[in-house]
Image (cartoon, rainbow, N blue to C red; front, top):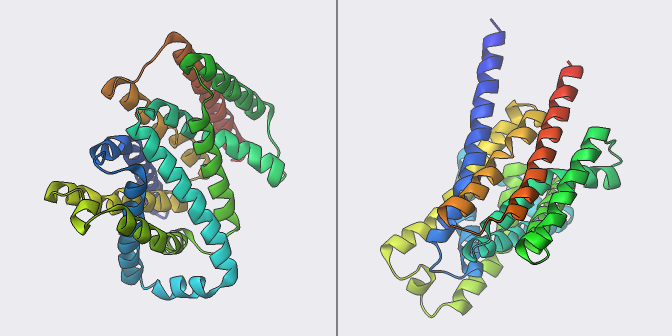
Length: 298
């Protein structure tokens, strides 16, 4: 009888992971709707409304004291200020890429993220990599190299997104606060900068919200668009294996890729498709190796 709750918990974890990655996958559509604001203002609004929502969740869960204690710790302040800066830079570049018709290139960055994590784990934490993992990394890097002739420039957006998010993961691994409290700490530290930006860059409060009630609703929705997938992701990390989570994460950039290609008609040449073909092959090798490792571990 004890098996059924475990199965139900795992099922809820998989559904939560699918929900998180689906929501992250369709976020480009939401950012496009916010195109009436410049990218820094979108990130500033996202920071403030995310903080307000997170503070409400912390109050509801009775974890407000943990946030206050964390903000009083010099060690926690330093780590989460660094992680907040990395997260904000990642958000800003992704929103900029979306509004400048580079969704496909941005999706490449999130395909590359797990391979960057493997490299960082080997270089920084001494993790051992299998031959299949090394082969996947080589194919992924080959796909990146093909992007240069495919799009006519160095894929700096993809590489910057992948590196900032991977470094964010490293800093969060070393930072003392948990996922929810840590994110609240990061947005708390970034909120004053966000408020100053909004005050200085807008002639009136109405301008900061786009000038209409519909635009204001979208702006306020940035908090939910940020927090909801993170809450789903947090539940998934507590209930399913990281191997399963690592495989499911490729859903988000796949949705982003097709949104950029099919919905917004971003250019897709044969060379660019071949580049992504190498990335998808690398993903397949990564997934197969992860599943075989999972089976061997019992």
